[in-house]
Image (cartoon, rainbow, N blue to C red; front, side):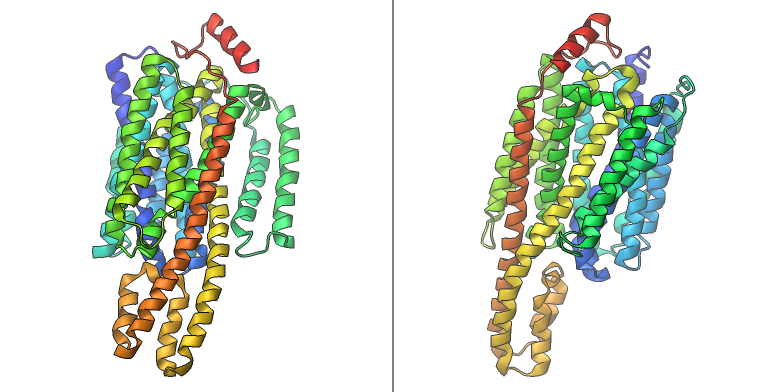
Length: 537
């Protein structure tokens, strides 16, 4: 598609960004709304699974589609992805319990993997790496824009309407995005016929799924040293060994192993993984702090988190422009990761008396840092590989970031659960002593405060408060404050853990080699030789 005029390319990019916005806004709208949804459906213990299943299924489809799109083109996978995502969004709105919600979010994840992988790769089809920086920044901005509208709409809907509309309100946008892709995106001739690596795909899936299940269940549903968790990890290792053997022998591997000989490819994916662990693992719990610890409504929470996404949008657009104009990117990666780490450290120091202005400053810092560094690592990978491998290389970045996000959510969930358990045992002992001389029916109502989930439902909290006699009001307030202290203590561990992981990402970036950005979509022989020498040095 290099031969297309700039006007045609811009129109195609608009259609791609419309599809991305549809997928992104349906993902981000859940964030601030989910605590209230969980409060109605129940299943606090499965809270992280609503995110985990989404990232798990999207991770599996991302790498598979990346390789297939190199053969069949990006258009069919964009269209299939939008269709599956739309169906998943509709079904999610019909959920009657937490298990159905998790299942339907998994379907959405399948569609999201198709959309995101194909969308970012299509940019590589249209523009040379030197031009690609500004478009990658704009696409990151689209995701950030969705992160502004999504949480705001999600919080407003659950505060004023039925929560089912969280999943249904943007369905018309899916139809529009489908039509735009169908009409505007050019059909690409199928490349030479190659056998699809189905066996490798199966064993890659068998590697990823048990590993992510183990991380998700360890420390919550099962002990880390339990036979179930050890068995899952062992199964994942065996499947990975078989996957390596298969990929060495097949003609057209789903993930060519020789790509990892390229240091830029390997380091970029390592950073993407750690970035996913820190970013997704910590960021998903921010609404918990705002609503559960500070006691704000879901709508108010969305206004606060909006500042983080607005700063991400601005920073990503600026970062993309700087890359396109200067051709330099490594210092931007450093700057973004350092700023994000500083913001997460700040989040870790928050407690029940933290002011809104302080929360805003930390959120803006995290968003600005992420906006600077996120466009970098997709660009470095695309610039370091041959054009014929553009799809699988781009998908690998999405895969490792999604894997990192899934592992991060699981690990941070374990951190939160263990720290919460420690504090809740202290709360239980206090309640036991305080409730010794009060009527049984009143003690039963106060017993509900042992569950931190009650903090996420202000109406339920107020209902308990209003039914208590005057002499028990002070006890009620004391117990709520203690509960919020426990949740604050648990979340501080989550945010500090995210900061530590971001430090690891900074360490990996030290080893990232910076090579000149190509000036055409396909490398010239001289550029190819120079980049190959630098990457393998």
